Length: 468
Ligand code: ADP
Ligand code: G6P
Image 1 (cartoon, rainbow, N blue to C red):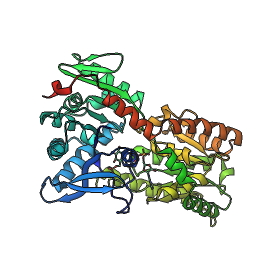
Image 2: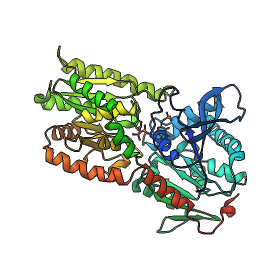
Image 3: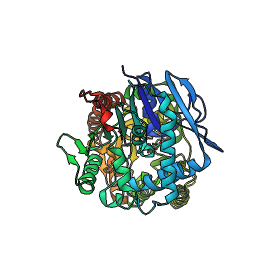
Image 4: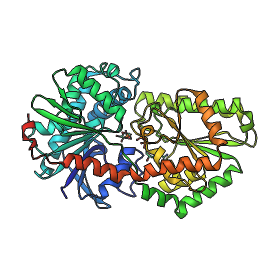
């Protein structure tokens, strides 16, 4: 099998070292990389005074990781700056939160060039290179400029923004043009892919876009696919049935004292719709007082990107709102909202998912959302919980049997909660079965194979002509 080099900003920390990485990208890739004998290249997560380009190799669980330290200015301008203050909000429809600073764009270019320069000696002519996510859009182009002719694929884990918003980015054309240096671009859903094609048709009139998803721009040809990421379903099901998960489930049931559990698990990010979710729950308690003292919402939300102000703001808002809801409805014997800012190991999460009657997965925008799939995989087939899922998550394209909601509407959220809480067993089972069939079929292994088969699909054409 062709050796695979995966490149992403964040490389999963060695097993047993520090807290588990909470991101969907890292979680999915650590499963996926186990299947290949490749190298995973990226940032170590460390900051140093001056960039050295020295690679630290490690081997964990059959995966070789090769990481580099970044200097403080890089972390500030590239990671906290362009990636998380400019692109992330823009790609999640929050142009109001996006900051456009020349120094951020400069840091982004610099770090992508540094990544290319540093990984270059690792690349042999046979390797397949697979670059991930919005942090590294220009990396393919930087590698081509250094003579790399290998097949290079790019996968975007986030949404692709609507045209009108992307135009707010001063360097939008340059960013998109860099994508033409890849051989294959993968999106999480047809919606994001269509949005990308719309941009290309509008902004690159000279590009030739064919029906089968091939785009030609001058000498360069790139194929585009919608290829939704999945979870390691078998592993997650096993984890949900483990002793540890069962213990977590029993502990949870005990603490609930007969009440129905509603659960939410998300990074503490403004794109996850947590404020609206809390308002939806508040609405349920106000409009359906019969549920007071009968339900409990557990929201697990570990802090994320804490150096970015908009994340500090959303945290403060949620602190206040959770306090407000509990102040309004709690009794001496009942706390309606359990709001927890920490991570859990996967078995405990699975056990808590299994103890719940419903899950709220209601991002305002999300490339995919793996929690939705994990929730389904964790359920007991005889007594499954109900998934309430945002229409605006990539996962909604595959998970139509969930209760699909508009996450901006507290009323819709409250109605869906009431519907979930009174849903008959037979309906819960039939919805779950249909959802699980998809989560099993389109798992992370299917995703990996689909993308790599398309990338490796050698049409006999060397990509040498792509070199700038
Ligand atoms: P994102 O990639 O935006 O964070 P996803 O839902 O796609 O969103 O992926 C999140 C991943 O992180 C899931 O695998 C989820 O189980 C994991 N995760 C989120 N919060 C926690 C937590 N508190 N403890 C453990 N894992 C978590
Ligand atoms: C999302 C992004 C990933 C990122 C993860 C966690 O899943 O698509 O690229 O790794 O969030 O965010 P962080 O900034 O902690 O890496």
